[in-house]
Structure formats: structure tokens, C-alpha cells
Image 1 (tube, rainbow, N blue to C red):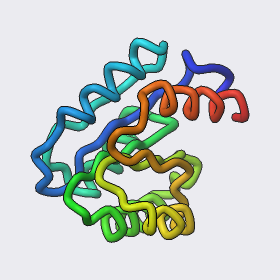
Image 2 (image 1 turned 135 degrees about the horizontal axis):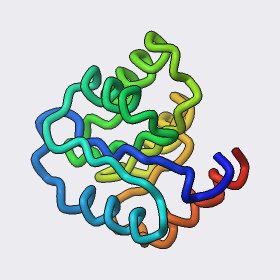
Image 3 (image 1 turned 90 degrees about the vertical axis):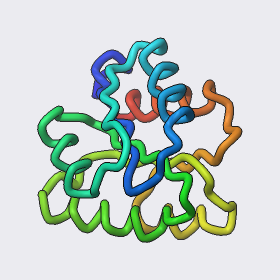
Length: 134
């Protein structure tokens, strides 16, 4: 990833979580910051999310999880990423994430955790900094 314009981000809504306003707001903010964004739509399985990531050739997968199931969902995602051989994808998670769960998510491989209320500028700056490293 040479710059933010080359960054392609998948914003995904796993499981039965029907709350997508935050995910759509983040997706729009990333687009306005110059990133290419793919939105998965609601109620996606981990298999569907990984397949979209492969088909769309994204650099980054962002999960929006409001159900409290962020740890098992993230574990399943990384399991499927490994199976598909796409371990180069960067994963970040946003939503209802208690601070006590952040270390576990990072241990799983999540590079950024953005609980509800995180300023959009913080998420954008984080992704831009990643694109400069890659």
C-alpha cells in the first residue's frame, strides 16, 4: 500500500447485528478521506466476509460489531483468513467493545480497536498511518 488512495477497505457487518448506522458513517468518512470502501451489507457470515475480501481484493477488513460477540466473531474471521491464505489483510474492529477485551482482540491479530464514540478522524488517521507503513 503506497498511499491512502491505494487502500481498499471492507466494512463488514457479521452475524445477526442489525445496527448499521455506525458502519455506514465510518464507510462514508473513509471514502471522503480518499479510500476505496466496500460495504458488505447486514447479516454476513464470516465465510461471506472473507469471500468479499478476496473478490474485492481489499487491503483492510473492518468489522462493525454491536452484539458483544466480538471475540468469537474475530476468532472465526482469523481462522478463515488463515484457511484462505490471505493473512496479509489488516483487520480492525469497531462497535460495542469493552476496554477489557481490547488486549484479547489484539492478541488475535486485530491491529486497531475503535469502540463506539471514537472520533472518525482517529479511525481515518490510523488507517492512513498503516498505508504509509505498507
